[in-house]
Image 1: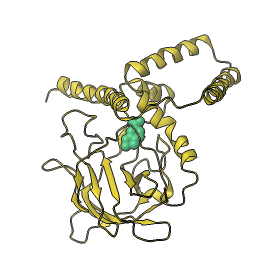
Image 2 (image 1 turned 180 degrees about the vertical axis):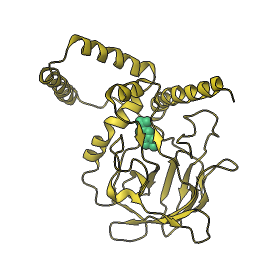
Image 3 (image 1 turned 90 degrees about the vertical axis):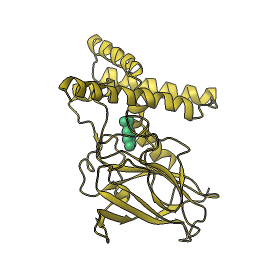
Image 4 (image 1 turned 45 degrees about the horizontal axis):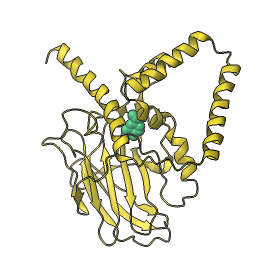
Amino acid sequence: MTSTSTEATAEATAAASGASATERFQRDKQITATVSQERVSTLATDLLTAVHDVVRRHRATYEEYNALKAWLIRVGEDGEWPLFLDVWVEHVLEEVVNSSREGTKGTIEGPYYVPRAPSLPADADLPHREGERGTPLLFQGQVRDLDGRPVPAATIEVWHADDEGYYSQFAPGIPEWNLRASVVADGDGTFRIRTIQPAPYQIPTDGACGALITAAGWHAWRPAHLHLKVSAPGSRTITTQLYFAGGQHVDDDIAQAVKPELVLTPQPAADGSGHEVTYDFVLDPA
Ligand code: DHB
Ligand code: FE
């Protein structure tokens, strides 16, 4: 491949992720205006007051104000509002919304969830390409309730990046449901999922979010992670992620979504192929 075509591929990837994340959000999320006038006024007033405080406290200049305007316009043009909000804001929403949970800790959903992934039985190989790169991983466990009883009819939706940090349906050239599935656990809540360990994820660097990261001198990385949504009739659905002990950026996730309870320590697999790890989910009642 020539260097020109390599650059073209990389550009398509970053631009495509932002645009598809926006399109997905508009298509899949129920965005209904059930927020009362009073609540809108309260939240909007406090948000604006917080902005005013920043301007006063830091004696912002017109150059900075115009740089902000230009950047906000570009976030929309690049389709990066889902990326921006999920990286820098969602973790606080999650903290507030899940503060009363007693079971498995939640964390952010991020922009790359796709509902209605193909259903697989409890003992499942995630859909993958022939010769899919990455260390094989057996991820197994049980879904239980707060009293330790197995939860019947649980579904484990799992999605994750490939060995290069790319997600199917958001980066070009990857089969539609690659490394995505909706796994139906056994009657006793157990599951065995075979996949590969994902790579750390770099948020696209050639769009507006990347421009902010560069301008501020930050880094653009999330640690490698598995995304999960675990649900069952009568239980409160949990959206979470699992990380890998010792992995890059576990201690400095740009999205601030790592919690100590969510860090796995995989062991060499009994059959000698890659790693295996057991993780049990605990669901709160609905
Ligand atoms: C983003 C990407 C992720 O994979 C994730 O888990 C959270 C956020 C993002 O690019 O915004
Ligand atoms: Fe992710």
